[in-house]
Image 1 (tube, helix red, strand yellow):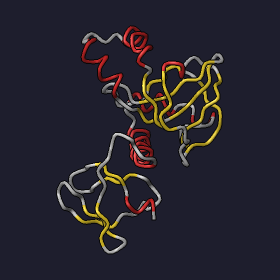
Image 2 (cartoon, one colour):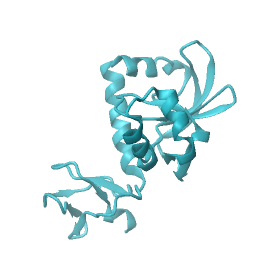
Image 3 (cartoon, rainbow, N blue to C red):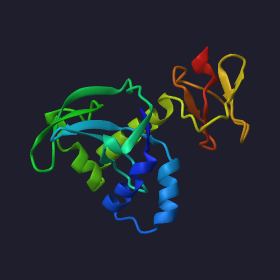
Image 4 (cartoon, rainbow, N blue to C red):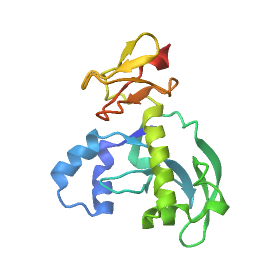
Length: 184
């Protein structure tokens, strides 16, 4: 799922987030697309969990602040319940290791930098960012001999394992590209 802040709501986000360089940040908020890593409902408010600014963990923002660019939910998402920091139960849609009362400390451990949770989040972050096409990316990897891809930036050739993902990432230069195998 991809979202972007509504232009009319950017000031709410800036006030809520205590960001000081408003002009540059306002431009970035208007232009950036965010991958949704989780959706939860708390006090009848739907919130999207995104990586905001330079955080290494997600932050929840109310859904009314966003325009949905791609409404497809990740194949890795499941439905469950979780607990907030103050012990309240919330509905949560996210990857399996985050969802469920038995995993209630996942987010706290992620914020604290616990190695297991950080590694799991990085794994899903990489998967979710490649799963569906980012409309801002127009360059595609070149398809060679029906199974191999070539990066147009560094000319590295690799065999892509995630053929059903709409995006791919060059293992050498980390450029994210359209995956030509996903349309075959």
